[in-house]
Length: 225
Image 1 (cartoon, one colour):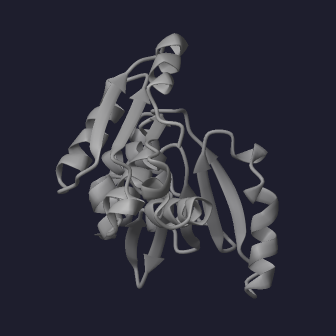
Image 2 (cartoon, rainbow, N blue to C red):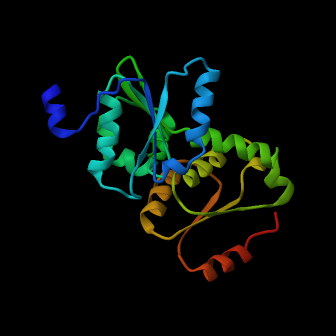
């Protein structure tokens, strides 16, 4: 088994517990400074953070290598994933032993963890983005304002926000209209597929566009709320 793994992946044996931040330009992120402070607060100062910089829409092999490092090295504890949440899962889904319900619904992972030798993938954006939106908007926002949602970009965060509103039980907490604009079609198709799996009264519109003037025209159709 070890020989088979070494033939496929370059797994580095870490000497200290390591948590990874999988992104694009990770050295510039504030988490690199904040993470050690968090670890001190929770009593685990020995855990270090290491950035993994990948290209946007990188190769399947690059994503699988990043996951393999976590899966097969005992002291590689897990990872936070940004930018690559959808692409990473598409490339390495078979390497995970467990995907939480949101990861399965959204088709993305934002957090990778290990439990008793099992590699687990989680999608936390529907929870964290939802909490932020609830704090900003308050209860019955859409009933009070008649507002709608215009979302530029159809990546993982957009999917999470859409799912958050779909799951709102009260009609006043759901927009009647949700417009998502993206420069390429695959992300729009991914979001459309996710929404189609749910019974929702929100009218979703998917716009493939990269012209700022068209964006302005769409914004002009949105209500003041």
